[in-house]
Length: 181
Image (cartoon, rainbow, N blue to C red):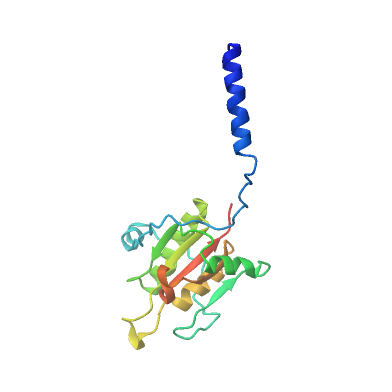
């Protein structure tokens, strides 16, 4: 490199440093910026019917009763309630969906188990489970809502869950925070 080139480079660096003298780095943010594209829910009934039934370890006993329309949530004992607050506010982006519309109770339990196993294997942190609002069921009450919540509480890889925000399904869906591997 010639002396003229070195002088020019030195002048450019001096100009750059002078221009950046008053610049301060932005503070770190714990916010997730959504790309705006929504992940459409895909019913997985066909996939369920093609799979061989595996042993189902989730109990169908309802440990916690909820009234129709009630918003409910769960955070694993020992976890901070800040985790639940962050989940409610959309801190983690939804990485996959499970739509349980059209499933029987037994099919829904099996499909939820397969879905969560797959999500944990893929190291997903936040997923949405659409259980429905029960608008077409007897008494217009959600059939799967309490069952899904109780099944989720039985899984050690579920850290927290809460009702989805209105734009993510509201009372007909649950956001689930999974343990990272």
